[in-house]
Image 1: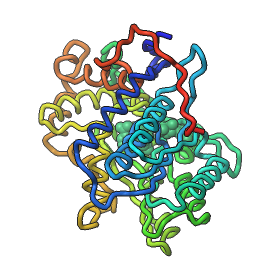
Image 2 (image 1 turned 30 degrees about the vertical axis):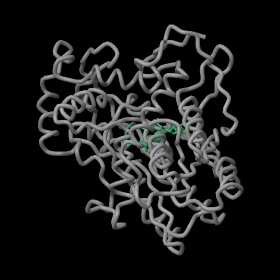
Image 3 (image 1 turned 90 degrees about the vertical axis):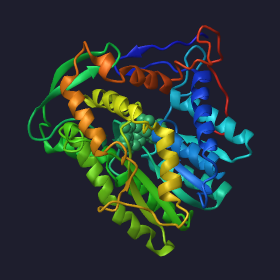
Image 4 (image 1 turned 120 degrees about the horizontal axis):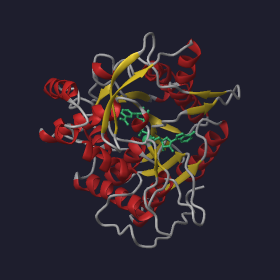
Length: 399
Ligand code: NAD
Ligand code: NA
């Protein structure tokens, strides 16, 4: 079929198999161009491996460190006449490239929050890899069925305390407007968001893996967080999602305790704001990202997901002397360039000026949009989007 973007709100309903494969190839090429990561991981589990930071982590482990990788994700395969989700095509392309390079790569497509998928993953590790030495936890989801209670928790993206009014952009039309977001009405909204995006499931994974004996001596695990500038605090760090991130960060010592007797260690890495399927759904944030991109590109310090994850592995998790640089709260920071004072001062100034009329000029809304379409395999100059393509791709290593 001929596959073109079909956009509804902040999601794109279609994805292009060859375009997503191009996106994956470009990321692989970037990682290869940086050379091998000394003392990198060898057997890696990535939970949330199909898009965004998780996919970039998997690519970095495989092509930067020759690692065998198992990916877990929740994606839809194609049916005739109906393309797969971008994450499914990404994973298919990744596995084809990994296999061609002689690297082990298999994936489990299912609900990572469930006990079943954890058990299936453990079986696969036992069968194929024995033990793993790195677990990357990179889930982003709007809901979670709790495996013990069966309760379905839905997260909300809201401020806590008072309503928040600020600028936002519809990144498709480029219209800048004011938006007021009402605060949560109950503690339950906060608790639900923490249940979905907090640290409990990460802990459940590490407990199950540890108990099954599939974690190697000295195992590392890392999950991803965000802080960002004061202007997004009401909706992000001081809002419901921020409470979930506080909880995720508070899970680090809990997991360290689980891993103590095998000398394992857990980290949260605070990453840069980037265009992903998850971040495009947060009000106010797309306008911030488009201004941030403009400033960081002008300064020559812009990074995408793959640059971030390559740097996380090469300059944080696996340094030559084995020391992992962290902040005063024990967190890894690869948002260091985003948070630089000169960058934030310029973004704050542009934020005050931004209007529908000057948006194209003062922001990188064009780059934002391009990155958004790239997530679904569109806007790649190498691909002819008028041509017929096979929507159904078969990759037996994804089960
Ligand atoms: P993403 O939407 O690109 O990736 C989410 C991944 O989770 C996908 O692989 C998806 O298949 C998987 N997933 C979702 N629900 C699942 C389920 N029930 N079972 C199995 N897999 C499931 O998101 P992202 O932006 O890469 O976010 C990953 C992490 O990084 C999140 O913790 C996020 O908060 C954090 N982070 C994001 C940003 C940003 O700007 N995007 C910045 C800093 C930190
Ligand atoms: Na991810």
